[in-house]
Amino acid sequence: MSRECTSLAHYLRGMPVLIAVIGLLLAPGDTLAPDPAALPAARVSHNASTSEIIIELPGIPLPAHTGHHGGGGGYPPVVRAELPVDASLYGFRVEVVDSNGNLLPAGLIHHFNLIDPNNRELFLPISRRIMAAGKETGTQKLPRFFFGVPMRKGSLVVASAMLHNPTDADYAEVRTRLVLNYVPAEKWYPFFDGFPWQLDVGFPVGDKSFTLPPGQSTRSYEAKPSVPGRIVAVGGHMHEMGTRIELLEVETGKLLWSGAPMLDAEKNITGIPVGKLYGLFKVGAPIRPDRTYRVTVHYDNATGAPVEAGGMGVIGGLFVPDKGMEWPAANKADPLYVQDAFHYLRVKRDTTPAKHVHKH
Image (cartoon, rainbow, N blue to C red; front, side, top):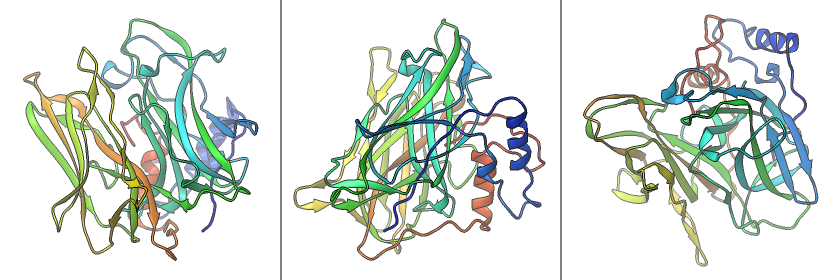
């Protein structure tokens, strides 16, 4: 199996950023997606002694009560990156820091996305989501001797984030960074090459948040996988007032995974337990291209009124294809691929910068 991924450089500012944006918009008509290679570059650092790669987005100011429901702001520029080494990724965490590198509260993170534009998603012909994390995700690690995501040095990835600041504190500069844990490619382990996947109730493309109606409600999306294999890990992300998110095999009614949020004293979501569907004698839950799989998120909105952009439901994790199965490359001419690329790159089809939208 190929080992693909990414590296990073230095920030582009001023005129170079303008040139990069123009490059994104030069795709002829709507038959081609914007070119991620024209994005400004992220900052990357590589610590070989700890086997960590850090991808850092440009800093932005984050005033009090901004982002998400608090109003504008909260969006660092979308950037491109390349991995500096051949690696097998097995863990990650997302951090926010100030201009001096001091850690800031994790509650400022709404979500972080890392996207591979050259390979497709498991359930849709859109760019593959390598990882997605929210404030409740925390540090995630797979058993590195068993599972890893093969990534090749120099492969292009796209990194983006959304921040929000529900506090009374003003932050002059907030930098968002992703820390990846990896095993060097020359090691004899891991035993299984795994690949990320994602299934969102807001699929196939576009804004993934939705207005949350009063009372109890659900939202679902279903699709078939492109290749057979096994889901070995699954986690989820939802907004406040979410009560459960689950993955179901439609034809058999088999519940593959269900997660309920952990709450603090104020009923804010602090985490969603990750389902580890592997053990000593099994490697994950099998899924098949001739079966349909449905993600459903449940909410209980007790405010008595609709909450704009109050709902979201996405699951993702690690998938191990059956032996001999190759991960499919992206068809960049597919209409869904093109629509999705315009969306996650925050570029509007009329060649004007996209308004900030809540996306994954």
